[in-house]
Length: 148
Image (cartoon, rainbow, N blue to C red):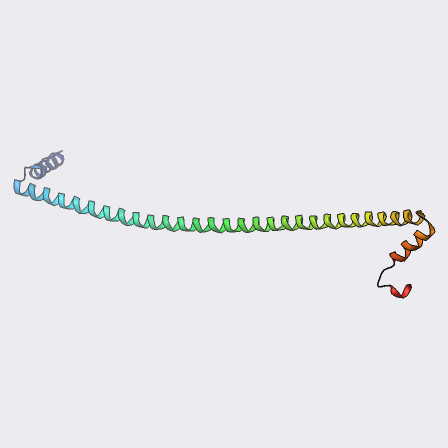
């Protein structure tokens, strides 16, 4: 028990001297030192935050640029695909129109042939023999002069 009392008294004496009031000059110096240290730490943390911010902004700008490039590449690819699709549709339409024109022309030529065939049959039976002979003479083509 003597040891514990002795330890308690020694601790109280050491603590009392440590807790004793310090002179004003020491307090002021310590306060000034603490203030300077706090300012220094604040400046360092601000510089670190600015550096991180600049790095972050640079990274963000880099990511924005990459995203913009990807977006423009995707748009270009989409535009190219749309152009190819519209060209294919245009070619298909042109082919269909060409086919329709060819069919129409074929039908028109058939009608014309039928009309001429009917016309020739009609003329054979019309008029007198003299008129039919005259008609046949005039119907000969000029370039077939050897036939006459």
